[in-house]
Structure formats: C-alpha cells, structure tokens
Image (cartoon, rainbow, N blue to C red; front, side, top):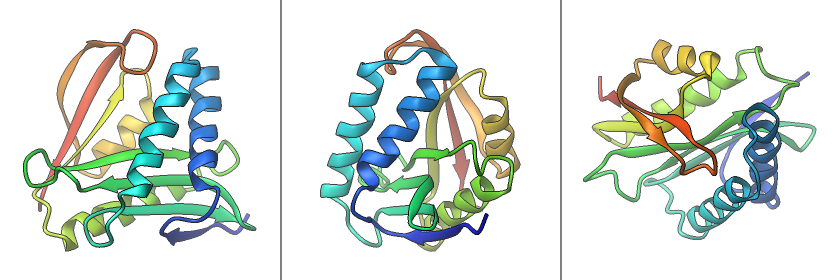
Length: 163
C-alpha cells in the first residue's frame, strides 16, 4: 500500500480524524459519544484557528483516503509547550512505520520552529504508542487517574525537550 504524507488541512479531514479516533477507542477502551464529540469539537476549533508556522497537521493518505494523522498545536507553545495531538493510524497501515514517519514530521516541525518543549496526553495500556514516544525521546512526566475522555483511565503526560 503506497502511503503519502501531506501537510495541511484537506476537506473532510476533521470528520475522518474524529472517525478514526472514535472507532479505535470505542473498540479498545469503550469510549463513546463524549470522546468522539470532544475530538471533533477540539479538532474543528484547531483547524479554524490554524496558523502556518505556529501549527502543523500531517495526514497519511492512500488514494486520497486519510489513513493517519498527527497535529502540532502551537497556540500555547510559549508557556506550556507545543501540544502533539490527534496522532492515529488505521489498522491497515499500523506496523508499517507510518506512525514513526508522522511523528518525525511533527518533531522536525517543532525543532525548526524553535519550540523548547513538546507534550502529549495519553493513557496507560497503549504499549505500542508508548514505545514509539519513548523511541523518539519523549519521557513520561506525569501519571494520574482521570476521565477527560469519557471513561476513567490512567492519564499520562509525555514531554520531549528540544535537543
């Protein structure tokens, strides 16, 4: 399967990224409408307020279909760091190195932009994602129970400092 990674918004990406998250996390963790709505609402807000150079969005595509995504939200980068968000791939491309390529695009962007810290929120139990983050020099800095995704999980914050 030939996958291309393209930078920038494309029509339909908000719905498709929300769909990918909703389907994956519903099956894996029982997340429901609250999670899907949160992803769609916050991603739509991000896209409406997107500023080139401050923010980044990369889409893994196959024949025009979005098969993965990653976002850097730079709106609070000066105080909190660049926020890595909406990182996901479909089952069809998982395990082929596309996630690593998406993550490398985001890291290159924050390094070029001079961001000192990049952070992301996730939760325990996602071993492959944790391995990927750690292999790209993110480190776990905080862990506690939370329910921002519509179910109680052990939330984790990973950070990566500028090299």
